[in-house]
Image 1: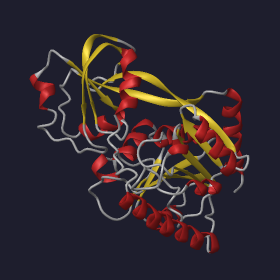
Image 2: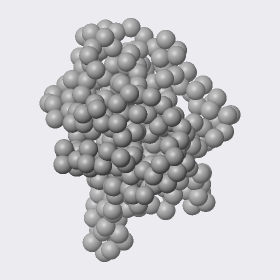
Image 3: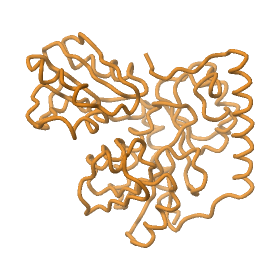
Image 4: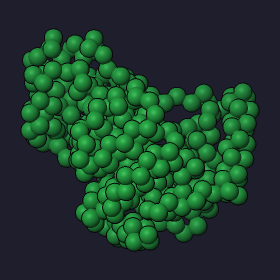
Length: 340
């Protein structure tokens, strides 16, 4: 089950949700009246209005991959959630491979996948953008991670990812919504992780204004051995899963076809910082197999010995279920890249 727990539809929850919605609506109106100035390079925002895992990182990876293929220099703008460093951190394409403590687990994971990706880490994305402009990389495209609510930076394309049951969800703290449903009117493109239910479909019709909507499905790239990087599709042994992500049930569903049997799933909180004690079971149970997510492996890698032979991580990616939607999506990306 998800580790995210709203307080439910109690009286105090309704009052707090009403206050929260009023504040968010007022804030959005202020930005609508005084929007930020455009940057000299295109900016694509990938974000959401539902707290927790909604497929933003795999979608961001897909966009980064496409931009590189188009000869662009992608720069990931991220606050670097969970990092222990301070201020602005800029990692150019020719820089060293950063640790998750310096840039956050998701940026570190994406940089490891795409060594030509620049990282611009700061809770103040515009401050990071100022430093990028001083370095003057060529053919830049900014990709703003979890950027839908970060309205201080102009974006040329606003992409929102949503869970399939989004339509029946409520605003924080009653539910998991960071913003009311009406905020979707700011989006240029809406991507679902899973086939939306009827309530969600009806709501999208009222708020999407014929914007591009699509469904993405998770595909696995296989199991990656943490020590040797070798890849396999199936292990004929029982496994214990370890995860510290917002929606661990999705990891379980993705992993189960790769193992003969899953005998246990150790669930930690989202972005959990693993300790040596947490992972002691790997060395005390060397005859057993363990599997984690790629993002969790990034956080584990600074404390796990390279000699650990019984740990794998599952690499995933997302693809559109409809080829026509796939073509329309990348046409939208390409128009954004050609705009400046």
